[in-house]
Length: 505
Ligand code: KIV
Ligand code: ZN
Image 1 (cartoon, rainbow, N blue to C red):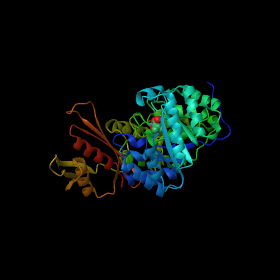
Image 2 (cartoon, helix red, strand yellow):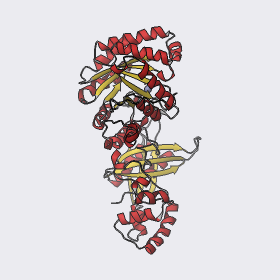
Image 3 (cartoon, rainbow, N blue to C red):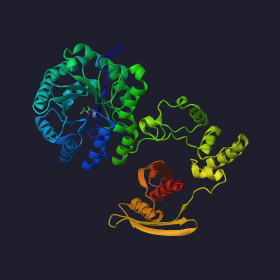
Image 4 (cartoon, rainbow, N blue to C red):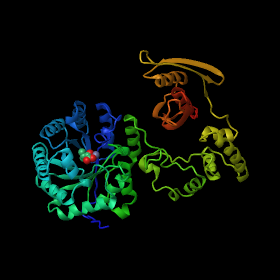
C-alpha cells in the first residue's frame, strides 16, 4: 500500500452531515426546532462544518438552513446544491445570515452517472462542474465541490475535474464514495493519485464522504485521511442514505486512540459524543444498534466473567477507551448469569458491603439462581440477595384495557398493584401505547423520560410475539426494560413496568 503521508497539517476538519445526508433517511425527518437543537449540539461538540440541508429541495429545508444560520456561529454552515443555478440561488439565500458560510455544489462524475443519470459526456459534465463553482463563487468565498460517485469514477478524468474546479475557485474538493463501493487501500490510492497528479491540489482541502454499503465507510475515511485528505464527512451514529455514512464517533475516536500511528487531530470535544448521539437518536426516532462502536448500549458493557474480572483488575485489559472520554459516566459491568465472582464482589462493595470469600461464595450461588430467572441483576436484586430488602417489584400489572381504531381517540385504562393495593388510571394518547404509558405515569407520579422504544417481531407473522425494548431516564440514570407478548400494547406496558421496577428509590 502506497500511502502518501502529509505532514504539513495534522488537523482533520470534521464536516457533519447528520442534518442533510442523515436526515434523508426515511422516518428520520426533523422539524426546524429539532434541527436547531441538533445544530447547537454539533457546535458544542466542536464540528468545523455543519451541512444544514439542501435548501432547494423543500421549503422546510430552506427554513432550517436559514434558522440554523442565525443561531449557530462557530462552525461554518453549509448548504447542498446540484450543479444548477436555481439550487445555488436558493442556497445563497438560505445562508444569508450565516457568519461563516459554504455552498456545496457538485455533479456525478462516474461514467455510470454521466451516461445513465445525465445522458451526457465527460466533457459536458466537466464544463457544468466548473460553471457551478464559478456561479457559487459569486455568492460565497467558500465553495466545496463534490464529484458524486467519485469512488467509481475514472481516475484520470476525476483528476481533470478536480484540477478544473480548483482553478474555478473551489476551496474544498469532496471525493465521495457515494455507493460505498471502494476498499480502503483502493480508496487511499485514489487520494494519493489526486495528491500526486493534480497540479493545483495544494490550493484546496481534499474531503472524503464515504457510504457504508459494504461496511467500510469508517475504514475508507481513515485510509483517505492517512493518504492526505483533510476533511472527513461524517454523521452522528453513522446515519445516512441506505447503510449510512461514516460515523463521526468512530472516525474521531479512531484518530484519537491511534494517534501515535495516524498522527492526525480533530477539534472534537469527545466528552460530548455520547450526549449528542443520544440526542440524535431520540429526535430522529432512530435507535442505535446495541453493539454500535463507541455509542451502542453494549459498547462498554462487559458481561462475561473473564472480561469483567479483567476490566476490574485493569480497565485497559478490555477497553480501548475510557467511557468517560466519550461522555458515558459509568462503564456498565452488567451482572448476568455469565458474570463471575469478581463482578459480583465489585457491585457488593459499591453498595457498601464487605464480604468474606466464604460469604461471597454463598451469595454467588444464590446470585446464579436469580440470574437464571432474570436477564440482568440490578442493585435492588443484590440488596435482596444481601438480605436487606425484597426485590423491587413495586408495580404489578393487574388491568390493561385499550380502545383504539381509525375513528376513536385512543384510550387506555391501566390498573397497577402497588404493595397489595390496586390503583387505576385512565388516559388518552396519540396511540394505544402512548395512552397506556400516560395512564401508568398518572399512577406512579415519577418524572420519567422515555429515551428509547424499540419494537421487534420475533419472526414476521402478524400472530407473532412482539418484543419491546425500552430505555427510560429517571434522575439522570438510565433503566432498561423488556417485555414480550402477542399483544404489542401489552408487551410495551410490560417493558415500561420492567424498567420502572428497576428504579430504586
Ligand atoms: O453520497 C454523496 O455522494 C453525497 C453527495 C451529495 C456529497 O451525499
Ligand atoms: Zn452521501
